[in-house]
Length: 289
Image 1 (cartoon, rainbow, N blue to C red):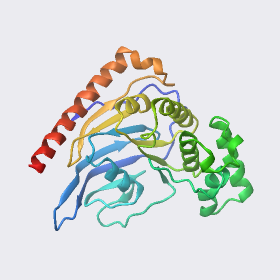
Image 2 (image 1 turned 135 degrees about the vertical axis):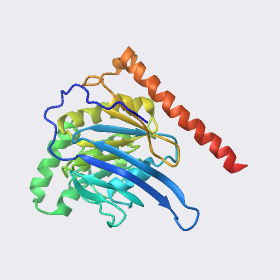
Image 3 (image 1 turned 180 degrees about the vertical axis):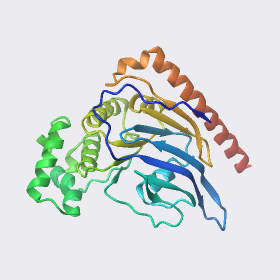
Image 4 (image 1 turned 120 degrees about the vertical axis):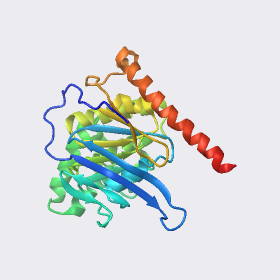
């Protein structure tokens, strides 16, 4: 295992006080009394509050399983997860989703019968503690800061592009002031132009609302462009293969993708992922034989 993690130059303001994750020796076995499929094996990772971490690896390596454990949708077979030093997940802890960790999925999850404003304020009002007027004022402010989306506050999801819908979903997550934002391949179905636009909007939101972000993706270019660290996982059973520090300055610009520093990082990441993809392919051939 190669561990080269360090932090890039800071230009994002003060680091938040909450949102630190400690993932210690986490394993997940599905159907332990039957086929015993090991999805994760002794996976460990520390994420400081305010870090942007991207996780990449071959299909089936356990990326989504890990995210589901972090989100409180699933329980590890062994090991534990801590959030700000407090146990969050373990074999003896019931799954516990909560507003301190919010997930944005690839498929999208806006309520089609609600306006943009209604979607963004829904979770905040559901939690209680704020009036509708206060919730709507906070929503309008966040929408305005994200490319003047306040102008579509009364629109319905069906009237929006996929990129616009995804921006609204991220704002809906941020309005709850989570400690951790979990993004599960949110831009996977987008074309190159829309994906590039979404990268810019996400980075702008990250600079204004610095949260711990765990970003699952198959796209190495995306991971290196967005994140402070890129975590490469092995093929199943998934564990940590390489922890790559992305020491590139912020704000991130597309031009930097032609720099020697970026290309060196890309070469390292491509080699690591390619090794695992080859192993996954070879194992698949044996399993089919």
